[in-house]
Length: 356
Image 1 (tube, rainbow, N blue to C red):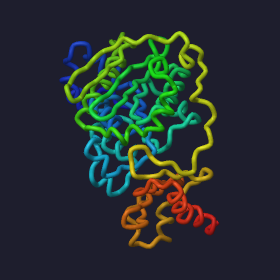
Image 2 (image 1 turned 30 degrees about the vertical axis):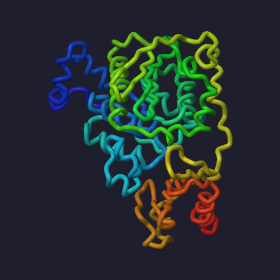
Image 3 (image 1 turned 180 degrees about the vertical axis):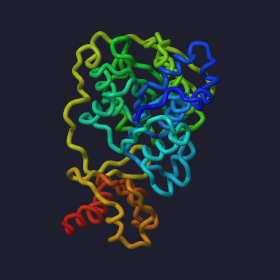
Image 4 (image 1 turned 120 degrees about the vertical axis):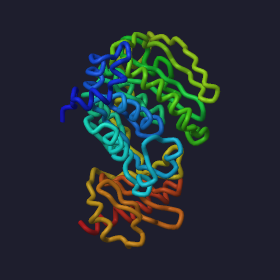
């Protein structure tokens, strides 16, 4: 579907924006023709998605592997209590809200884990990539793919009251690895930073506004600074700007080694999800599950919700399983990876084998 550029309704909707010096009708056309991919639909991702949709961006791809949980609601834009009760995938729930904001824009929800094998396909046809993730490993995957494909992207890091923003334009300034060494990935994974530090919703909105403004300026062609690292204090409302330089020995943007795009390392069958009391379990191979058919064989009292994308099953008073149609599952209420895998094997794998 081609995004509508000009109709009487659209002209009226964006009339105040058109009046802004430096935007005008020509700027609106650039915004409506822009294609954005947002990787991660959590707190920063949804805040940026809403801002960009309300600005009039014509195409937004939303990529996320997770579902809406009640703990997302205090700090995450767009999601509602109903989304959490239904365990809707974040990408789907976010997409539906963006279409309510502007039915004329094209929204492409993608429910998947970002990996070295799929990142290039996810961002190949967009103009700008927006970081809504919560870990450095995924950001370095984005960084390598963006450099390889020549795609501008905005890095957004956040924890507690504080955040960092850097708009990266390959070849015109430093990349993420020029600023943050790769060894920080292992350090982050060891300390589980997002769980320790938490997050404040108002500060997230502050930081998302900065990053979205940079995206807007890039779309309009008025962003000429690709070397400023923004250090944001959401508690004191201070913004420090640090000039960062391209590392002449950078493995990514100088030597083009793309170390984070190497063939996927074997994925752990069960992995604790950072910042939550849950474990993600991966199927041993690609499968597709008809969830409505699946719940027919489950005690009705234990089926908490079902939709085309997820089925939420009660395991005990404290534990539940959200099964995705691609065979992944999130066992909520435990951090015991072995227990989570046993639950998954019993309720999913063994059943699929028995049913042929």
